[in-house]
Image 1 (cartoon, rainbow, N blue to C red):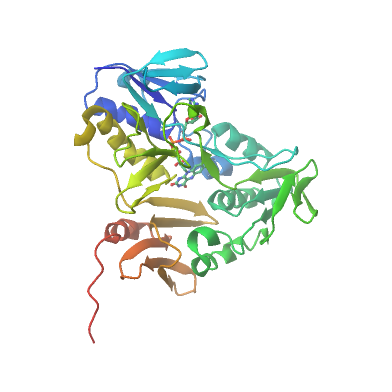
Image 2: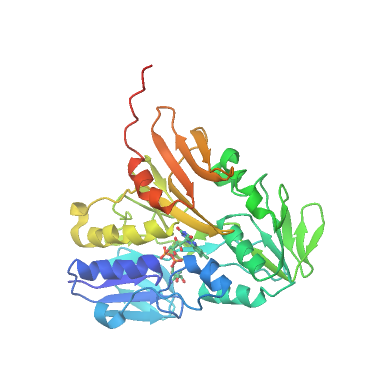
Length: 379
Ligand code: FAD
């Protein structure tokens, strides 16, 4: 067996290592990990860790059992695919197979004022330490992360303001018809929509019209970008992320990419998709490992995307992928609260489903997506 080098010690990197061993790889595996921790889970960072119920979120990853050499605090700086060499800040490493799993990094705002983002365990502990009763927290972005930070900040007794560019939180992702049902959840937050932020200054958040929102803590949740800058000059094709086929393979021989960094071809969608969800990063790792060991014989990975968010005491789960012109039908519970939303394309087939506090319905909904449309009923 040849040497496999995995770049990135997050969820996708960890899962690829397990899958390679499960599939019988006996040769050496090296993991080059910029962080100094063993792989850990990120979804609980903005939930349990901020709420104070957990201080660490390790993933199952036994270095000895997996027989991997873990290089914490080491950063990949480039690749020479023809020579099969990875460049790192601690020297070059030859590889037979290379797994790129460098994830994504938060987008930041301009300005010299302090702004915290949420990607690492250090980030989460730093935010948590500042969520003290009465402190003025300004969150930029009423996104999934923004909603989870707001939830924790309220629970810890902070005064929470959130600035959002769109008309309603999550309107861009879910469409206004669904998103407006979630707006009442923000009732304890001073939510300011349709506002553009110019920068973060020492006083707080500066809006485009010059107004300043004073803050003791500014948390920015305005999206992430795949970590691909270190591949410049390598010839590995990128779009927003690293472009791969449906088996996680880049165009370079022996080089695969998986997780938040990868923009994988989806035969179902007829497009490259940057999915950026926990479920996909973990599940596609099995395909990535198979592709490295079996090439074309590996099964393609094109599952219906799934993600969840825990916010304001609710669990939101979404499966599928809708487009802006799909029809959406909303159901509510007896109290008029959003229960489900279901999107259908023009031919009547279900493209996406969202449930609020309905974990038992998710699997069925996921299975039904992408199935042929039901024959129209005759009456
Ligand atoms: P990552 O977990 O980001 O791991 C990438 C690793 O690569 C990092 O450790 C990084 O330091 C390292 N790295 C980067 N560059 C280099 C380099 N040059 N050399 C070496 N190492 C490098 N998803 C959901 O579906 N539901 C949720 O509720 C949810 N909540 C989330 C909450 C938070 C706070 C965050 C940050 C993410 C959340 N996600 C959620 C997304 C989910 O965690 C990600 O999809 C998943 O972590 C992606 O795994 P990954 O291995 O691709 O990337």
